[in-house]
Length: 426
Ligand SMILES: Cc1cc2nc3c(=O)[nH]c(=O)nc-3n(C[C@H](O)[C@H](O)[C@H](O)COP(=O)(O)OP(=O)(O)OC[C@H]3O[C@@H](n4cnc5c(N)ncnc54)[C@H](O)[C@@H]3O)c2cc1C
Picture (cartoon, rainbow, N blue to C red):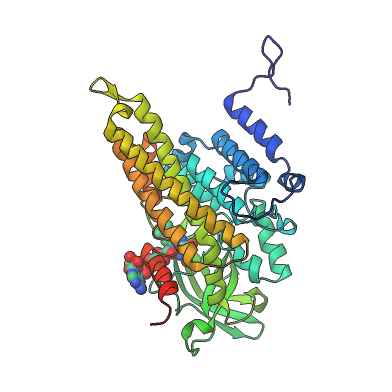
């Protein structure tokens, strides 16, 4: 590739090409980056280490260079997944950054994944969410699956050749997944699956789903009779349909999955039979941090746009930013964001230290989710009528933000988790 030069012979590139070029330099080998920085000691320290700063910068430059408002609106209108952006993000190692190298990952932790997710959602809430959910639930396989399953399912996900799904919610079991109506009955060396899952991310476009099924309907308590089983798209008896028009995240597929005597080999069982509920709870401890990072990025992105707008727009002969009311709104928003960032990073760091703390994870998800909704709401207010228009983006951030308080456990369910950790069995 020959880069254009100006009269002085200095290479000039457009903003987009410059960003991509820099990202290439920065991220052409995240693995190499990892080796080139010594791991800093894990003491109490509120700053990112140099390696994390480099990843954050690379993710920001990639998102700024590649995510485009017009592309986002096109995908939102057409309800199509941004496949081309996923491919590029995979090439640079952003998707599955927290997976081991042998499965196409970069061997980083949840902190680094959270930094990428935050930057992606900051630049564009819808694209950021879509890309960060490309590997949704794969961590169940990563943690509990066989070597063969990891090779077969994780590598295509990190290459951007497959999207994964996690099928937990059912029409009659949403917040309460302790009993599943979807059953998997063992017949010879196969499981025969019947039931319906709903609201499943990547449901109509995913390559496989990690399904929570009741394998022992007699188990007491019922959740001790649940297992996770991988079902591939195209399995006879397995069909998908779109759940219908949504408020936000329109470029992400949300499907209803139906199983009518769908047969899968018994080797598709993930880990041990009847341990599925525990595998899913462990997954939530990790995935709720990722959703909290999505929320943080959305809040920051809505704030960035509002801040810039109030410095440009004049009314009554003054910039909006010169009104003290505006200044106080901006101060409140940034206070909420910085507080959310502390708890999101802390919960990610805590997870990476091997300290599984559902209370902390729930606090992060609940708090960051609320902040995303409130900050995006205030951003629309600061834009006035323009904030209500698609073109100014903040209304889309607001629509996407609301999901942060619903999926992966509603706000109320997070409060239940926090309260139960505080109170124990009463
Ligand atoms: C766009 C989208 C994507 C999704 N992606 C996935 C996915 O990929 N995989 C998947 O499995 N699921 C997914 N979900 C489902 C999501 O996780 C559920 O919608 C959510 O867990 C809530 O379940 P529900 O909708 O059945 O609501 P319900 O459980 O019926 O809850 C309704 C209301 O009652 C409250 N409530 C329920 N129980 C209690 C209680 N004990 N105490 C206090 N309040 C309570 C809830 O907080 C809520 O306010 C997705 C949902 C959406 C909208």
